[in-house]
Image 1 (cartoon, rainbow, N blue to C red):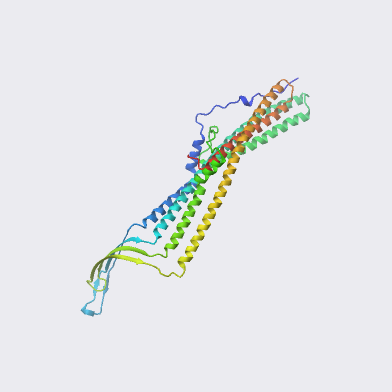
Image 2: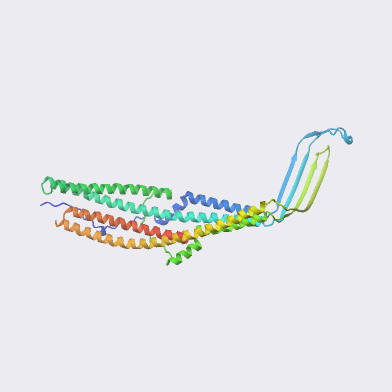
Length: 421
């Protein structure tokens, strides 16, 4: 009696040799950080915020201003004072130097607001950096998982093609029924459908990887070990409240709002500054007119009654403080929830990896046993194919669980500010 030939390739015996030129996860993260438009925009906003801070600080410095005009014309005073009409070249030149002595808190509050804005922009850039890193890890993991799954389905399709061919020969020889041949063809069709789905997943994963890193996904090294994460949930929450950029951004927004209150109140305070002026005038009022002057002194300004403008502006600034503090509490609550979710997600991922590892080992062992049994004819080939399908599912589940665990660990570290790259 003829037996079907089935290639024996125990999964536990397949070891892929690492490629020397394989790109590792660190390189993928570096490429993503260099390519991410969101991070580039956040860094540009940070640069602009720092420039606004420098602009606010510059208000403390002295100001030197020069104004002048020169022209040509004719003055005719109608003979008044015996001055005859004449062509003139009117010239006026004035230089002014000013130095603020007291601004009622305007400059200081403006600097505080700009400094808070620079901090917020910095935290936004840090948040974009952390999110880019997590996205790069997720994309890297998805490419590896999709490629491995595609390879496994390709192996299954190859085996089923041979099984279908031999089943056709046995059917012609009258050794099997038409239903057995139909089952073999159905298994092959199912495998081809899985292969098509896996190919689509690979294409999608590689496209997402290239969009994120700016480079095609070539040979990728296996997933690295897990990074160090907080040892307890309380430690993770404490780290997040200290280092999370989104929460620090909310705190900085409260400081900016408080500086806005000081700026509103400063509008009702006097301003005092020192000045020095010099002027050079020619041909301004009659021909050959000349006047040179200079003066130094102190100039002040104080609005004693503003019709309620300062008071209403102050009330609005106080309301902004209340709103910022409420948003800070909301951010703290949301962050605590996200840390708890990330912590439990990582713990769940650890258990999933352990479970899927045992499942994969059992499925591979069962597959090897089925193949050996099929060689001696004690089980039908379809039983081997079912075992192969279960092994593929288990292997894919293990790959996905490992990727999800790695992403969960980095996501937790992103929330707690433990990513130094």
